[in-house]
Figure 1 (cartoon, rainbow, N blue to C red):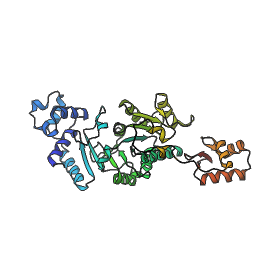
Figure 2: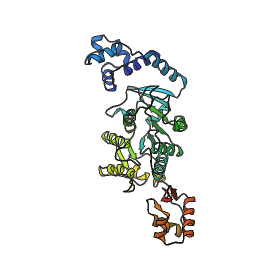
Figure 3: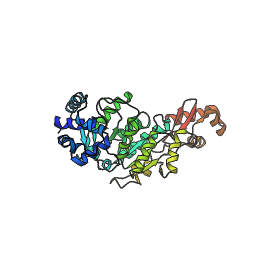
Figure 4: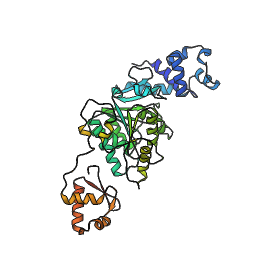
Length: 369
């Protein structure tokens, strides 16, 4: 349970201009707590600090009273609102072992979820339909196997990963790049509510922090740090998901990547990771076999989805399609079937969820096939 004076000391330390996370952790390691830091004599407090930092610690920031009121009110408003700091007994060990653990975390939901075994699932904000399906299906299977899915609440793969985990009846953690009093993107407000009810939303940023571009790459180290491994579903070569994968690798965590079409820009990031040593995965079981046993059967994760019961005609058509988007004209050339027969078979496969119709009259096999 927080005391208001204790909260004020933490906010003063972390909100002081020029006192970054690294300096704050060094001061905490040296003196134990923010209250102890501010109780020191000026000479003892300022040891090893630059002149500007000394001045910053000597005088509380002008916005501190407002920030304290806002944070205190938020903390008291809901029993699911928490603040976790370095030194708390339930601070996640995995995150503590990284090079840059946050000094303070704002939490909304069940903080006990942080003690569970976690896997990051990340990828493009603009995935292909197949990529979105993969993110959801893998996350569902991995959750059913006992893992908690961690992602960033962004559009695209992140959102699909959270949704898949919830559909699997498990827990999921969203690490965000804003203050917890605002949800970004706003399109995910309802999803954030679901996550807070059965999982956890995490931020190191103070209340009132808007969605600033530099904050999102920085939060990726928390996504990587909370987990045993990182699964990249789809990613371009210059992608924030590759930052998360690199941070996971540097922290000694497993990195997994789903391969894709050689013609898709969203496959190139995954292929580059595989060239660098990431494990190529085709099913959730491929992920689980690289992790310590979870104590539950992995049979549910042997594939991301069960195979459909196909007729010989449907199976032949899927073989002719391959795994990349293909036009109706190209399918007719490959099959030599009458248009009516071809359209009928395509319709049956679409209704069975075995293929999907894309823009531009293209068709592609779904994850189920």
